[in-house]
Length: 327
Ligand code: ADP
Image (cartoon, rainbow, N blue to C red; front, side, top):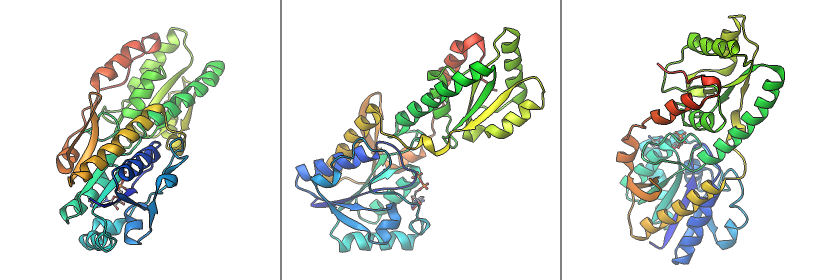
């Protein structure tokens, strides 16, 4: 291949820039031209493209977000939109595309591949909800951001002898809550993979109070409930002093962690290597610390397994023997 394009799509994630930088620099190293497409598939349909050189990716590895910007594009879900995209790519002599995003973006990558433009997907989402890869770019940084928030909230909860519900992102996937619940020593972790039982939560808080522990952190994944309404429900019991915080978009930003820069750099290069060989319709992942690639449809069809061992372990090591809430 002589000329490839790269775009970021869907929700942004810290470390996307590391992937862009590595893909651009490796492509230039193997004598390919690289076109940056701004604003995801929308930018493709609007022909928002520019040439990328070594310097266009300088000073970005440490930046959160994506220099290419991102967007959601309903038109690209349609066959007409996809065909229009392929025409634009052909008109610009683009032989292959790299898409950094989540499972929705991968469906767009699949469509491009099927219409004759080999396309490779790189997993970029803080949610870590893609089953085929152990980690996606952005998850680690988001975990560290959440841990920082837990530490700060815990300070004030301890001082005031209060419980706090902290709601984190993750959509239908509980990984952000689970991993940061373990790392942050949360007393209770509530994830969408297990049914929420408010009575059980209250029971655990009651046990804790009986043992003289008046404060604690309840980590709640957004897919399992809402912090403010859960706090109101618990307040109705009249026994607990409780507050709630929704961390929101601060989880998406920030300078990427070492791990996300490492994932981004390796996956960016890996994707170009596939295109170099004319291979498309693949997604890049990491499994047991090894980078690998697999078919987009197969990879997206995989059902994510909840890390039940970690969930159980969280219950065992939670302070004062408070355990995670499951069914
Ligand atoms: P993510 O990639 O983070 O999962 P979305 O699900 O919002 O984010 O998808 C991002 C974009 O990918 C959508 O706005 C759309 O342009 C494209 N996309 C999503 N689903 C499809 C699909 N089934 N076919 C083609 N393109 C799609």
